[in-house]
Amino acid sequence: MGHAAPGDPTDAPAHGGPWARVKLPMTIVVAVLAIALGVAGGFGLTSLVDRNNAAGPDDPEQVVRAYLRALTDGDAATALSLGAEPPPETTLLTPEVLARAREHAPLTEVEVTGTDGTVVRAEYRLGDRPVTAEFTVVDTPDGPRLARAWGLLRLEPAAGHDLARMVFGVQVTEPRTAVFPGVYPVHTGRELIDWDEDATVLVDRPDPHAAPRTVLRPRLTPAGEEVFAHHTREFLRRCLTAKQLAPEGCPFSAEARGEVAPGSVVWTVPDGDPMAEFEPRIDFDNVLVTTARFDFTVVARWQEDGESMNAERYFDGRATLDISDEDAPVFTWRN
Image 1 (cartoon, rainbow, N blue to C red):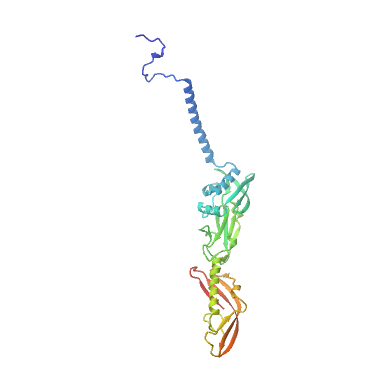
Image 2 (tube, helix red, strand yellow):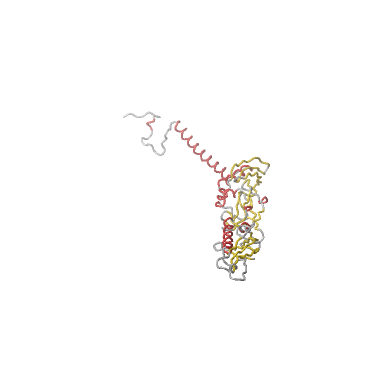
């Protein structure tokens, strides 16, 4: 058996010990280094992107775009986080109310049109209403933010009209309530009486100083008017079809000196249907009481001791409907 020459590779131990040296081809070394650098670079890039995303918008226009995008997406939490001043309360600043507001009047056609220092101008539509608005951006420890991310609903019921104020199913108890920009219909939550048509409020920007003051005035709903008209019509029908000269509970009567032939009494209204004058009005002292005034002439004809008789009566009066209990309205007539 021959001996290996000095420096021959076969001089290394057959199985390699802990101090054995292994020579790698240069291509493998380069490839390993490239992979290592790529992985490290990938982690570094990912961390940088994450840090940039976490930092949020870093200039006024980005803040406004991010805010309007959050409203469009229905992201109430993000929209609120982009405001510097916290809202006084959050009754209507919820994802549920924002979702209903988006359904009622979507925010569309958003365009940021310019910046003047810390004031950003934007145009958009809320439902079918075009809006041109200015947004004030302020510096905070977390970066630039809107001065406020909310506006105000200012709801003031007219004197004596203390009904509930419901916005998308949520009861509002304060005269000033924070909201996101949107179109907000205000209702009473009742079937027969509601706030009038002016109780749909546009809040076009997150600026409480631009909040319109809305005076709420009640009115009967079409269903309420129909209920009142039905009770009034039935009352007049009962009186006018009565076969007595003095119908019980009715606002008119006639007198006879002789014997009235049974069933001969006929009441008529010569000037036409008295319901043509029907015009219900809310009682100022009690919002749940509605009245309608009537002013007309009735004529009675009958047979008395074999002769034809007639009498004309003029009267005025008020039909009244109390809808405190909408399931059991109370109708009365007052002369």
